[in-house]
Amino acid sequence: MIVIDVVLDSAELLKSCRVSGHAHAGPKGGDIVCAAVSILTRTALHILSLAEGIVVRGGPRERGVFLMETEYTAAGKQTLFVVGAFLIEGLHSVSEEYPDYCAMTIRRN
Image 1 (cartoon, rainbow, N blue to C red):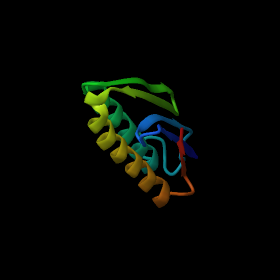
Image 2: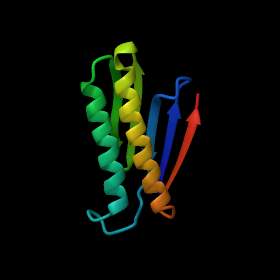
Image 3: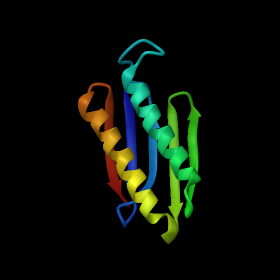
């Protein structure tokens, strides 16, 4: 199972996202759940790493583990809001559609 842990800061902006595990919803290289989660997290990481006013650390740690942490200034707040909301909604959609293979929690810090 894929376990997703999202942490939001006091402004409800993405502080961190940790993904671990494997869905095992299909054959290696053909698992739609793993593919969806991977594409969402890697695309968000890439977009945020290019944005002004956002420092993002992390990425794939090892097979089956992804971690992203963010810090931002006023210049990056809007971008982090939009990309973070897109990432969270996308991951939430995957976990709702495939609850036997993906679980997500959102914590506020």
